[in-house]
Each structure stands twice: as C-alpha cells, then as structure tokens.
Amino acid sequence: MVEKWAILGNTLTGLLILWTVIRQYFPFHPETILIKYIRKLTSFIYPYVHIEIPEDTDEYLKRSEAYAAIAAYLSASCSQRAHSLRAEFDKDSTKPVLSMDDHEEVTDEFEGTTFWWSSSKSTRQAQVLWYPTQEEKRSYRLTFHKSNRQLVLDSYLTHVLKEGREVGIRNRRRKLYCNNPSSNWGGYRSKVWNHVAFEHPSSFDTLAMDPGKKREIMKDLDTFREGKDYYAKIGKAWKRGYLLYGPPGTGKSSMISAMANFLDYDVYDLELTTVKNNVELRKLFIETTSKSIIVIEDIDCSLDLTGKRKQKSKKEEDKSEEKKNLPPGPEEEEESKVTLSGLLNFIDGLWSACGGERLIVFTTNHIEKLDPALIRRGRMDKHIEMSYCCFEAFQVLAKNYLDVDSHPLFGAIRDLMEEVKITPADVAENLMPKSVDEDAGSCLENLILAMNKAKEEEASKQAQASIEEIVEREEKNGAKEEETSTHPMCNGEKMDGEKKSTGSRANGVQ
Ligand SMILES: Nc1ncnc2c1ncn2[C@@H]1O[C@H](COP(=O)(O)OP(=O)(O)OP(=O)(O)O)[C@@H](O)[C@H]1O
Ligand SMILES: [Mg+2]
Image (cartoon, rainbow, N blue to C red; front, side, top):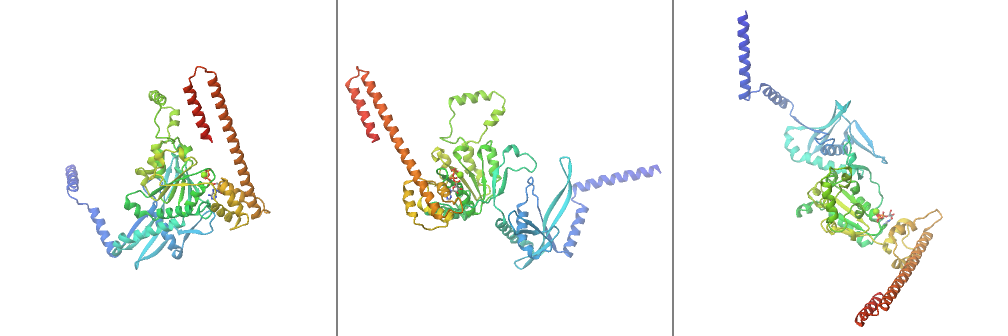
C-alpha cells in the first residue's frame, strides 16, 4: 500500500514538473484560450463594443479633462432625453447646469449612427490617514456597434471632445486666481492657486481712453485670440506680453479686467513677493490653464528687477563667500528669491509654451526703472501708455457716470483739460453723484471746480519752484563772489573763466 502511494506521489510530482516545463517553453495557457473563445462567442451573439472613460487620471487628484468634456457634451443633449438628471446651481445664477445622473443612459446620433452613453458610479473603502472613508469612482461608458469602430476612432470621439470643450468654455464661470504661498502647498487637496469667481464689470465700453488707441488694442487682442494657426506657422508659442504703464489712477487695472471680459479669459493675479524662488515660479506657471491672463501688478515694486541684470558688488561677493562656509539657516531661506533670469524664463522660456493661449500683463508706474531685457519686444510685445484724461476719455466717463453725451459745460471742461493734468480716477470721482439731489450739471461743475483748484495748485507750485531756483542761483553767485574776493592771488585768466561759466549758467536758466 505504502509503495502504491509512493508511486502515485512520484507520478504527480513528475506531472507537475512536466506541466511547469510545458508552460515555460510553450505559450499554451488554457485559461487565456478559454477567455478568447468566450469573447468570440459573445461578440457573435453580442456585437457591441464598450469604451470606458474614468473620472480620475493618473495625476494626483486631477480630474480627467476628457471626462469633463464628455460631461459638458452630454449635458447639452441629456437634458432633452435623460429621465434622471442632476442639477447644480451656480452662485448668483438661476439657470441650473444639468448633467446625467449616475446609472443613467442616453443615446446620441452622429452621421446617421446611434451611440449609447451611460454613467456609472462605484464606491470602495479607502484609508485616508487613519480614517476609513468611502471613495467614489465615476465613469462614462460609450457603447457602439462593432461595425462603427473606425467611425468612433476617426471622428466621433474627436467630435465629442471638441464640442464638449466648447460647451464647457461657454458654461464656465470665469475665475480670478491668486497664488497660494508655497508653505501651504504640501497639504491634502491643497492647491498652488486659490480662486474666486471673476466679476469685475470693467469693459472696453466703460474704459476711458483715446478711442483710436482703444480700437487698436481690441484689434490686437482679437488677432491674438484667432491666431492659433498663425503662431504655429511662425514657430512661436501662442502667448503675448502686454506692458501697461502710467501714473496711478489712469486705468491699468481696469484695462486688465476689460481685456479679460473682452476675451472671456480667466485671470491669474501673481503676487511675486510670496514666490520663494524660480522653481516655484515655474510650478505656478505650469498650473495655469489656457485662455487666461497672467498678471503681475507693479512689477517695479515686486522684486529688485531694476537696472541691469544685477552684478554683485565686491561687498556682496565677500558676504556670500562667508556664507558658503556656514550651514543654511532661516535667514538664507528668506533671501532665496525669484531672480530676473527666472522671470525672463517664466515669460519666454521653454515652459512658457505649455498650454498656449495666454496673455502675460505687467503693470508699472515707473517704466524707466525696469530692466530693458524684461520689457523688450518678444517678451512684452505691446507697450501701452495709460495717461492723464483727455477730452475724448472724459466723454466716455460722462456717458457712463451721468448718461450725458453733451452739455453746455463741456466747452469749459475741454479747455481746462488741455491745461490741467487730471487722472481718469479723479475725473470719475468728481462725476459720481454723492447724493440723490445732485444732477449732471452739478457733477460737471464739481469737476470744473476740481480742475480749477488743480490748475491753481500747479501754478503756485511752479511759482514756488522758480522762487527756489532763483534763491539757489543767487546763493551760488554770492558764494562764488566771496570765494574770488578772499583769493587775491588768483590770476585774471581763472577769474575770467569763472565769470564766463556763471554767465552761461544764468543763461541756461533763462
Ligand atoms: N481709464 C479709465 N477708464 C475708466 N475708469 C477709470 C480709468 N482710470 C481709472 N478709472 C477709475 O479709477 C479707479 C482706479 O483705476 P485703476 O485701478 O484702473 O488705476 P491704476 O492705473 O491701476 O492705478 P494704480 O497704478 O494705482 O494701480 C477705477 O476703479 C476706475 O473707476
Ligand atoms: Mg492698478
């Protein structure tokens, strides 16, 4: 009996070894063959193909763009056909955004062919830190007949994604982003940009400036928006830089809002002083989306970017040599800041081409303080001067604030505007009625009063300045005379020279 068991054991061991050898050297997998035949049989009885599009991507917590586009595409058609819908109400909006509810199915027609879309949701237990939570996974499933496989791959899916993206852009609420300090980047679900809905009402209609200049800017923006193919043809990243410069209160920030409203773009307001270094700056850039305006306000105050690309002084070099020998401390961390070359790379380095369709706008009150490399054409392609209020700009403000196209006081205002420098912000403030009793006439009178006051102040300032100049000149002359009278040994040649130079200076002032 024992012998028989031993023989059986040996035979089984032999068979197992033989099976392992066969599996290793021959591609003979009965289970795969079985699945293959089951699939063939099912496709014979059930000739439909499925494509699954999950909501999540491989990237950490990032929603699939394709999933969002499909949701937008289906929302346009599903509200007519689906039985179960989900409605989301945006803040301040009475119109709901409809989408297909979970486990719902709709049909879609394309080039005479029917396609079926269904949405599904599965939940699974997940562990976030020590707390078990329910994780939901959503996906869309496209079903079509196997004879339409080529149609789906060649054109249907492209059509769905393109239409969906367009619907998504039409339906979206535009956003105003600001950068999160990097100390907050590490946390769960933390983002590098925070956002609120963009609601600034400034537009090119409300913007007061020279009408010709305004038209030119609008045309420029239009050309940019339509320029995708052109930029590709000339081998340039699809982006454009604008430098807005001028005194405070001349409408630089208002212009940015007008641009965003005109183009229907999001706005990223980048606070450079909270960006620690060039790597963070690049990360922030990569996280911006296309169809957006990236703004750095008061660029001259944001960083020490003035003058030439900074050359270290001898003192600074010595200091940094000393520091090299010390371990990095908190002070050093503080000093690690964005450099001019980091900013130049941000504007037109290799990374700047990611995503495309972006405007980069800098504003400054002091263009003369900026490094020429930063604002050269190609980086800041268009320089726009926002200046003091001219009569045409005043007319726009009068129409907006008082709803008047003409008024007997307009003539006086036109004359004053040629003499007095007044910002659109000051004009706007004077035109705004401060009580219900104030009408257009009294507001315009307020403006005339303000301009007359500014004119008087300007005149007294000039008078004061010329008095100071005369006093200074006389003091200098007196000092020179004293000098020559206390140097009796001076020869005549020198005295002549001094006399000449004093005379010429006096002429210069005249
Ligand atoms: N060109 C303009 N058209 C219409 N309104 C203007 C214009 N300029 C200024 N204003 C009015 O003045 C206010 C301040 O303007 P804005 O903030 O755009 O000026 P700014 O040039 O950005 O000033 P700063 O250099 O101080 O940032 C705006 O809210 C707006 O009401
Ligand atoms: Mg501003």
